[in-house]
Length: 178
Image (tube, rainbow, N blue to C red; front, side, top):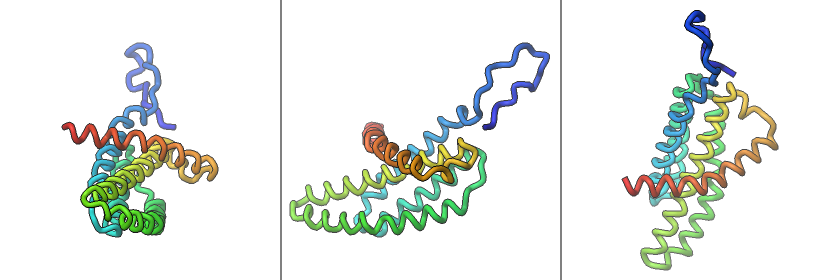
């Protein structure tokens, strides 16, 4: 773990309490994640399912790079490539389900489209939130988190997805107010 250099001027008195560098960077990283979640909420409203999946994947990739910049960490290109592949492959199941859900909902005029668009939008926002939190934790761990224990990672993703289901609608409400 990296720490702030408390010994810049050793004669200036007692050293302040050591604070992990990432504690100073976390607010900026949180804002990067929030901004990208809001972009994903908008991209989720794209009425063409495959196009919105690609847009959300690109938002995630951009966010990973922005987070790397916040933490002054090299972009993990190998992880990003895997993330892109998994996002695109993983989106086919939800797209299939969403297409059938949309088919069922669209029978209800206006409300059907709005409901399916809202569901897809929130799903995209939660996805970006989870990826953002995972890479934030990865960078804060010095680049070791995403190569850790698979059972722990699965639990982290499950818990973060649940957290995202609570947080993302709050982001959307706050953005609608401003």
